[in-house]
Length: 343
Ligand SMILES: Cc1cc2nc3c(=O)[nH]c(=O)nc-3n(C[C@H](O)[C@H](O)[C@H](O)COP(=O)(O)O)c2cc1C
Image 1 (cartoon, rainbow, N blue to C red):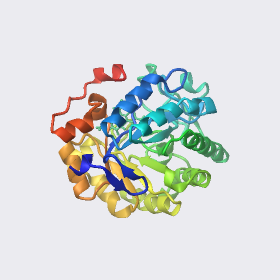
Image 2: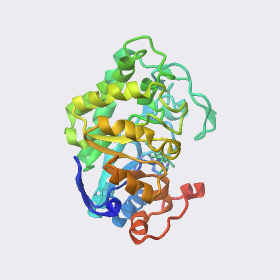
Image 3: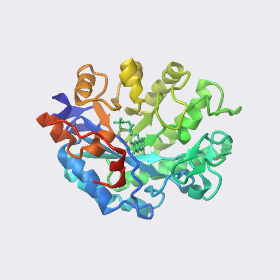
């Protein structure tokens, strides 16, 4: 199978398989540092043959936290805690990218110490299942503050690359800070960061530009989620217009690696509508997938829709996912109880 055979993929180069582990928050960091248990968890998947590991979301600045026991990368000491994890994963043959995360309004002052920040001053609906409180009412960032936030991403990217990560992934999806600017149903600004497609994309593009000016272009990946399952509402209403603006603008800024996160329903009910929309518009490395069977992942590769296929929950349930696919053994089904430990 193409999926589990070593390959040479765009930008990343040689990988031991085309299986990518999607970023998954596990909330097992200690004092915001990566631990030995996290090292063992990632190394196990690398040793089994995963080609690329995207780490769980790593918080770039305290103002961007929103979950229990997340790793942070705001200080050199926090970055250093990842050095042995990175070395172990790479020694086991995989590549590893650090997902850089700012939650924006999907948070609460319990985590941020002050009002969370966002594109808007309207709170997200619902309860934060992390602390069982309603999401905090955010403070809308002022235009003059954006550069400071871009600086958090840039500093975090530099720190991550300094401890050996192959790449960084800017988490611009799932209803978190960057997506709070992109999404027309959340962004209610009347300044140059809200309103038109161009204005709503401004935060993301300026942020990318700042990161690209600070680190080598081939080491940066972006994750967006034009269709998503979490932190509703779901599909961007103006998805095609957004993609038509964003994708060439990403490329013009030197970006060459993209991870498209999709709602599983998008794949299973509409045959991968989003990835089919993106592929003809994107020349660089493209990864994606949601709850696919290995056979469906293989078909995505065969049809040239993606260069690597991402799996999340299946890789929690099956630390030996790649071996199982190679040998044709079935997969263990994911069960939420599996989130209770790192194994
Ligand atoms: C426990 C859990 C934690 C997740 N945390 C993150 C995260 O930190 N960053 C992110 O981009 N996506 C996160 N996701 C979404 C996954 O990366 C993935 O897109 C999603 O689970 C769909 O893929 P799957 O059906 O193969 O699991 C998380 C998903 C799960 C199940």
